[in-house]
Image 1 (tube, rainbow, N blue to C red):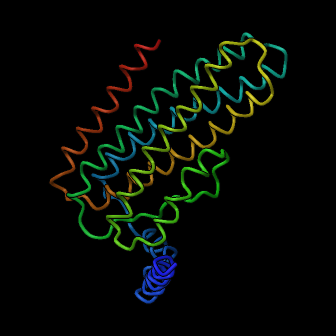
Image 2 (cartoon, helix red, strand yellow; image 1 turned 90 degrees about the horizontal axis):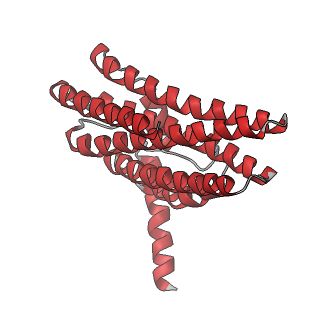
Length: 241
């Protein structure tokens, strides 16, 4: 009991000190909005982010069309669209995971306070993501140092992407084994897609935050590593096709 009380006292003291030092999340989030990418940084960020957003959009649109075709009584066409989504999902997972690994690699080179707003459970629809992010959300509130918060977000994002991909893969495999696909099957595909899209957006925000803090002399190597991730994604898509 004494240990528990002591822990609670330390937690409360940490939160109070954080407020006194002006380190509230809302204040930090507001400050990060004033950061702008340079032309050189934009030239790195825009092509990669556009590629990821396009890939994720293909998944969302294909699954929406699949659900509509299923409801319209076209099961074969609906399933072909699900197959397209599954193929693209694997490609995007590899791209996002590769990006997160690069962010972790270049984190030691970052200068200053890294803009890091952190992820919240609110907005995610799956029970899996709510359970997965609950501990992360708690830790994010008590960690003050921006570099540690950013590292925590990278770790949590990698685990979240892997967990959500595993859930989608199990759902897809179950649908492939049976032609009698229940409404719950289509609902799971829909909410998994929603959360995957949100995870991708959070990863791109983290990408932007680190890019702002990288020294100019590291940008060329950083960009080359990103291009390697994109090339692997293209190769994976070709192999799947």
